[in-house]
Image (cartoon, rainbow, N blue to C red; front, side):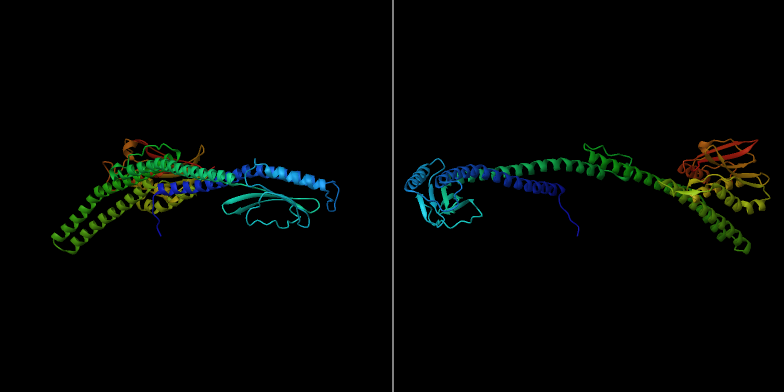
Length: 462
């Protein structure tokens, strides 16, 4: 199913979700640190006072049996319990209770919280701290074990600390919420700026029409948008070339097909309007066939020319030009024999070239066919291939009457000579385009005395 939605909203929600996770984690960490900062000093103070009572109970460090407490010792213990119980620097509601291993209370001070009972403690936890709630009051109680197995329990009310922690937690929550909202606002602002560039690019693209594909988008303010704009500009360049090729093909087809179609129609109308004899019909059909063949050749040349111009890359393969030259020579040999013309093929072995064998063969056929059509049968035609200074050179030479060579005009589309009786005017233009696609150079030398020589140089494969 297709999903829609605002990229700006999605990015903002993603930023806030990520920020929320981080804020919650940070808040939990800060809350833990606050708790340690509040309770650790209180626990240390309670533990210190409990250790004082344990020290009074110990008559001998190495005594392992029950304590033999004298009356003086009991007075000292009671006085210490009273003194510690009356101190209020740790908080209100302080109480102290000292028991022996049997659970008998040896000394006590203060009122224990309602519901609190001093139960036997596990020897595995010689020092233990706990919270105890009684109504609205909360106490922090320290349990310290006496070596003989007795216990000292010392507790104090913690309402003041609880209120301080509650205020700190409220402030922490409000700060986290404010930070999260600020993060959302910053994310919205940043994504708005980023999306605005995309919106600007989209608006520029929407303004483009088929006749304005030569326009290019302005570079972006960020690297990412700049890369997007560069990609879109390359796409626009390809579209511009494609549309230009299509327009040229349409114009060329409309211009060049008009004449043979009109001639074909005129031949048919003339044949139908005259006396319908066998000879007349035969002549009309022969003329129509000639015009149809011309249309077919012209359409094929137009399509091939358009395809070659529109392609950004060729099929790359290793092509043996010597084999290609021999193949083209064999193709034209029957024509040369029919005309009584000398056709010389000289293909010296050499390195291959990279390119399209189909297009290179078409280029050679066009060049040789051009020599056949523009020279008398008595003229010799030479087709050769040889390695030359790191290149592979193709040569098509004739000793015909020649002409005043003007390469700019020769390779122009639909350029025809004054003596030309046939052809589409696309042969040399197509050869020039094929050579250009292969990174090759094509040159024409012609004179009235020496004939015409067409040379194509292609980079040899290393």
